[in-house]
Length: 263
Image (cartoon, rainbow, N blue to C red; front, side):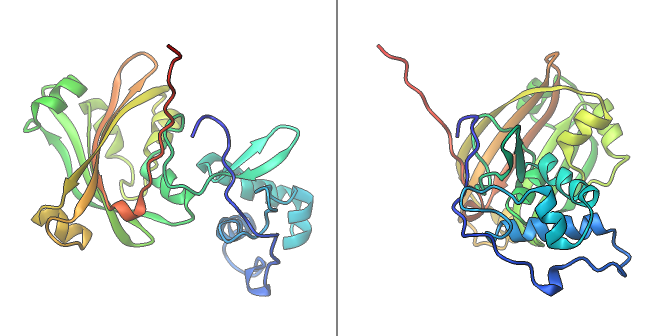
């Protein structure tokens, strides 16, 4: 994938059943009901045309029987998550439904899983300060003691990954004030902690499940897994996060664009 939008193949726009229409008597705000219906339906080919273009705000308002303000409030988080993309003068489009695409798009686990139409989750395995990290972590973070966060990551309550992240102490102490089972890490960096993310350097390889990982991911010992290391840095060169992860290969697809300079 380059920087351009990828459109997945879709069927013509489907209609919304009565059960999918917002319930005005429900205690859940209308824009949240509409947002989740849009999220679910666009991945099934509904509400978008054959090019992946979403209905206009006016069409969606009529479709769901709500105001354009409600529609706008419903769509905005889906754009922020990366599920939808606005193109000036053209409309709103469904992005590619590939779980991860390199290069160009830096996303955390929660953003990635939401982009596929699933609900992200986590179970905390370890957290807190440690000085028992290895030389690679020490080199990447540049600290003698670091704050660590190890989590089992879920997609629709199914374990699909294990993430072990390391942070400088001041960042870690800020993170532990938040709900670490639902945190969207990059958003917290950018919108709450005031960090401007520049880029991430990532290495992807293969590994085999040991007894601990196999038990957590419900696979056999020796099963193939995807292994990844990622260092995320700010615009001023500060290491923000060093992440080690393993994934079930059936849930992740890595696509990297390669170019060759002419001789």
